[in-house]
Length: 64
Image 1: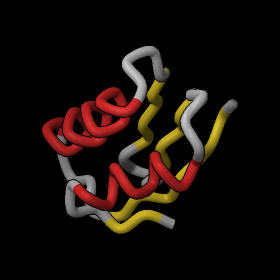
Image 2: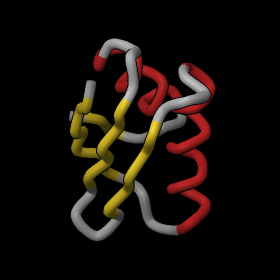
Image 3: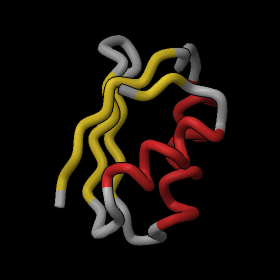
Image 4: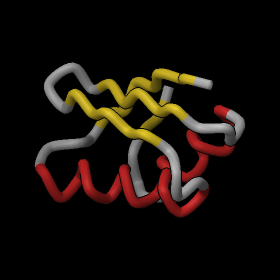
């Protein structure tokens, strides 16, 4: 299933990798697309949206 998250605080490529790695730690097969300028993260994964959001938030980003 695909979920879109509004993520605040991503400012560079390192931020994108951190968010991607947080999602992949939950689901190694997840597909992650990040639009840093828009603050959007699209995740295709079988994990529940709240688990993905929590993993991203645990890295220090605000997730809506």
